[in-house]
Length: 173
Image (cartoon, rainbow, N blue to C red; front, top):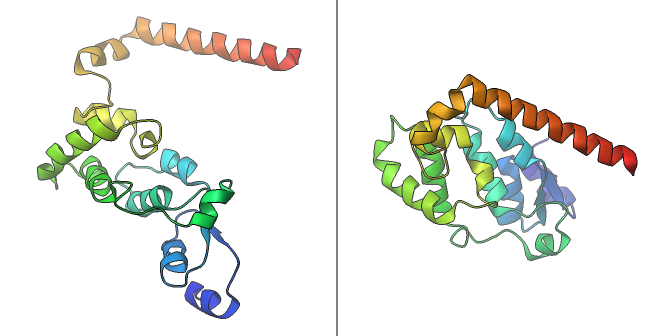
C-alpha cells in the first residue's frame, strides 16, 4: 500500500523512519507528526560517499526530530532556513561530486568553516574532507604523518590500550 494512502486513511499518530521521503510527505502534506531513527548510523555507513541516498538521508536528519526527542516531535520539523539547508545540500553535493560541481567549492569551504561542529559533522567524513582539502579535514602538512608506519603503529597501540582500560572499567563495575 502506498504511504500516502496510509496517511490519508489511517491517520497514524506518529510516522517513524530512517530516510524515506515519505516522512517529509507525512509531515508537510498530511500534517502528521514524524520522527527519524538511525540516520546518523546510516550516514556513517553509506558507501561510497557519492551514494545518491546521501542527500535524502541528510535532509531527513537535518529537518526531522529524533525519535527520542519527544518535545521536538511535538514542535514538528525544523525550518529549512534555520539549518542553512540550501548551503548544507550544496556542500554535500560538492563533497559527493567535486569534479561535476567545481563551482560549489567556495560555498562548501565557507559553510564548513562556519558551521562544522558536532551537529553537522555527521554529514561529512573526515577522510573525504581531507582528500578534497576542505575545512574539517586533516591539514595537508599532516597527511604524510598519518601514512607513516611508525605513527600508525603508535595509534594502533594507543587504541588497543584504550580498549583494555575501558574493558577493565566495565568489568570493575
